[in-house]
Amino acid sequence: MIDELVRGLISTPMETLDNFLTEEITNHLFEDATVPFSGLDLAALNIQRGREHGIRSYNEYRAVCNLKRARTFQDLSREIKPELIDKLQRVRVTVLYYCVGASENLPGSKPRD
Image 1 (cartoon, rainbow, N blue to C red):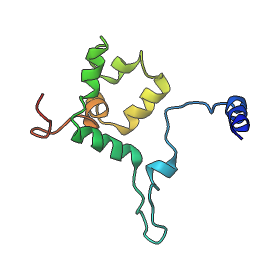
Image 2 (cartoon, one colour):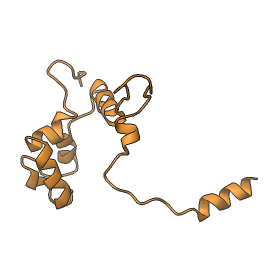
Image 3 (spheres, rainbow, N blue to C red):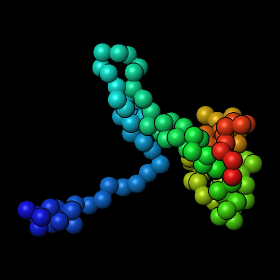
């Protein structure tokens, strides 16, 4: 039985990777079919968990990696494809909202170092 399992794992091609999450986990996680709009968003839950645990902002991690802090969307052009930057610009007000709005803590909410 284990041989068959391993053979299956080895012979099954990997799915291609992309920057997107399926709608099933961004809108319908733990959804109750009898209650409209009751599904949760796994990405949002993970962002909130990061905030609660004091994970640093995106720009702080860029600095750790010796990357320039992003002040404009063009500052992301070496790491993010131009098509995705165009999409982000259409739905986000500023690059700072994209980079740190999802992961930066509110004043007083960050655990002390």
